[in-house]
Length: 198
Image 1 (cartoon, rainbow, N blue to C red):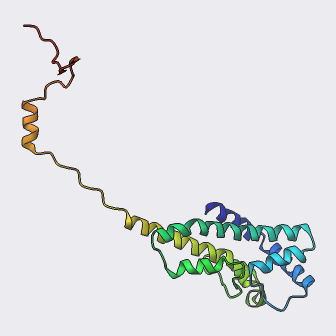
Image 2 (cartoon, one colour; image 1 turned 180 degrees about the horizontal axis):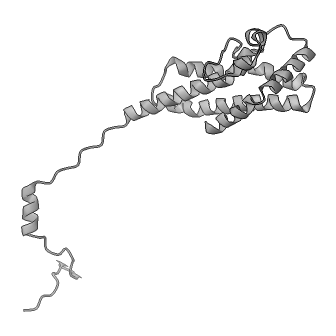
Image 3 (cartoon, rainbow, N blue to C red; image 1 turned 90 degrees about the horizontal axis):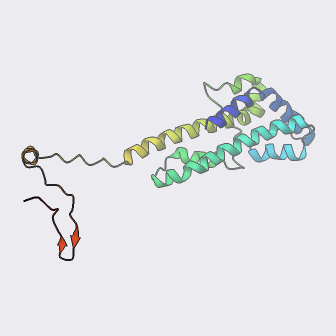
């Protein structure tokens, strides 16, 4: 998770580059009237309408982070199944990481500030969802992991209390210490006690 968060932090610093790359690609594709709405759409821009290496690189960063988030979800999904965790948040994660998930209406909330770096027109009509999908996905995964950690602690069985020794038995054991358990030589008729002087 921390590795993905660090990648996201660096990606946020290049948000203007990302938006500019989308602008150029959408203009090349003559597709500027609709909001960017799916991961597959970003992949399509990179594959078919990317005009330079800089744009291709920033698209790759976005797609790489989304792949990392999906892989992280796939790692925690079996644990959720083992713990019978079936809250709506899990289904939301599953839907978000579908390549065709429409994230155009997503809006990252405080403390995320991606929307603050867009104009009102850009945020409302075109790019609010695509810059929000990563922080929204991160928050969903963090909340799911927190829920799973709580659920796993609730299912851990209580350890049995230690058996207490009877005080009388302790006294008897002190007064009558056991004889040495060191065996003597073994003969055909069994264990023979060690030799003692007369």
